[in-house]
Image 1: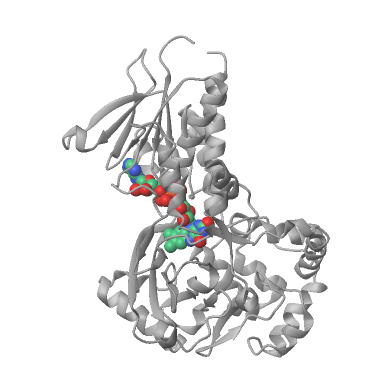
Image 2: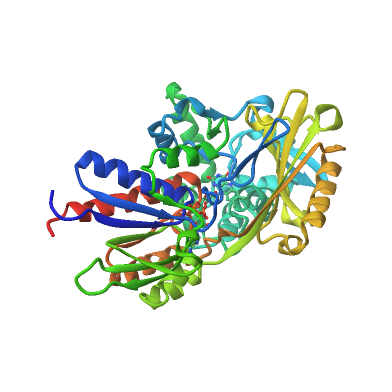
Amino acid sequence: MTGSPRKIAVVGGGIAGLATARFLLERSRQEGVELDVRLFERERRLGGHIATSREAGFLIEGGPDCFVSQKPWGLRLASELDLEQAVTGTKTMGGGKTYVLKGGVPHALPDGVMLMVPTKFMPLARTHLLSWPGKLRMGLDLVLPRGGSADETLGDFVRRRLGEEALERIAEPLVAGVHAGNPDRLSLMSTFPRFKTMEDEHRSLVLAMLRARRKTRSKPAAARSAFVTLQPGLDRFIVALEEGMPPGTVRRAAVVQGLEHGAGGGPPYNLGHSSGESGGGTLQEAFDEVVLAVPAFAAAGLLRELAPAAATELGQIEFVDAATVSLGFARADVAHPLDGFGLVIPRSEGRQIMGITWSSSKFPGRAPEGHLLVRAFVGGTKAPELLREDDETLLATVEREVTGLLGARNPVVRRLYRWEQAMPQYNVGHRQRVESIERRMKVLPGVHLAGGSYWGIGIPDCIASADRVASAILGRANAPQ
Ligand SMILES: Cc1cc2nc3c(=O)[nH]c(=O)nc-3n(C[C@H](O)[C@H](O)[C@H](O)COP(=O)(O)OP(=O)(O)OC[C@H]3O[C@@H](n4cnc5c(N)ncnc54)[C@H](O)[C@@H]3O)c2cc1C
């Protein structure tokens, strides 16, 4: 090998940035390619939205608390990091039951409702969550033809197939809630393309779900819980990723402030960053390739000079604030059995919180003996004003709602995590916008985008984006120069 190694900057120390750095380091070693990888993280703490805290025997997840097992990248990374033994599925107490609030009272989602699609007749017939006209309207899905536009809203799609009541009572809190978004703005194709595929392939969502269920039943080995987490906390991903990197790879408290073209003859990009080592000023460092694993609005700021058209479109991706409030109780102080996974709250209930997860019922090891842990989700497009309150007001409001709903009192632990501009909104037009951004980014060969702003917000999607970017960089490194 000749010359100095190619220098790669990864901006952002969330799961996407850390996974990108990891894949680059591991695969370049395997392929015998020399790369010099540097990761810049604005904060002292790594992990971005992944944040775990431990207090008084409780294990509290401030951001994500699990990830889907159906998309392989999360589990694959766990096994690459020797975290396989730490992966745990959901507990089954209450059979994975989810409650929906109606008229201030939690009603169990009827057995057989998968995502938002009913697959069992009797439980649907018996539930008080939906009116009879609402139930019959859901059943119409069986006979309705295909329809809709190429990029319709989640709201229009659900109204068309299952009816208004199914949207209000089930799809909005359960499905749109994942994005903390408004179903009348979210794009079906960008948030839940699976539903569109179901309609395209099977016409009816109910028939599609029934057929899918029959297929999984005939494959007994595929019995992995749909949602998994790391038993000692999701921050184990972050710790393991950093530990696997050579010393000096990760620079904490290093704010990347700008990206410029390099001087002729040298590497093509100059990255301006400030950190302790720059004494508060800006240091310029030259790189061959740059990965922006930061939210789209932060990438927009960094690309304003070099790719103004891409930057404008990046800035058009909307984000909303969110917060989580975890409350720990002695078991004797909670009247609700906390069976199942939690409670979702439709917008029409006029509450300040979007839902409550029974954290200690969902996953093992979340609360000490004789105690329970729950976590409320706040904000998004539903109650943005609550997030403008100070910490104590916000905590007190959430505590009041949670204790009222669960018949609980005297929390022994209260922990608030605020997440500003945290949830990208994949509104109608998102896919076209991201494709257009990618085309416009071609003016900057060697500058890449990764993370949850573009092709999926879940942890596995973020890792998949890291995988794609690492492959692209190694492909370029291996190409004849
Ligand atoms: C409350 C909440 C709950 C969630 N629940 C789930 C869940 O249960 N399951 C799931 O799969 N997903 C969940 N998600 C989504 C998931 O957590 C995120 O999509 C994912 O963690 C994003 O990772 P990322 O690396 O793309 O971005 P981030 O985690 O945002 O990391 C980006 C990093 O870039 C840094 N940065 C920004 N600008 C600069 C700069 N100029 N210079 C240097 N560094 C910079 C930031 O400080 C940050 O650390 C949740 C998200 C939130 C907010």
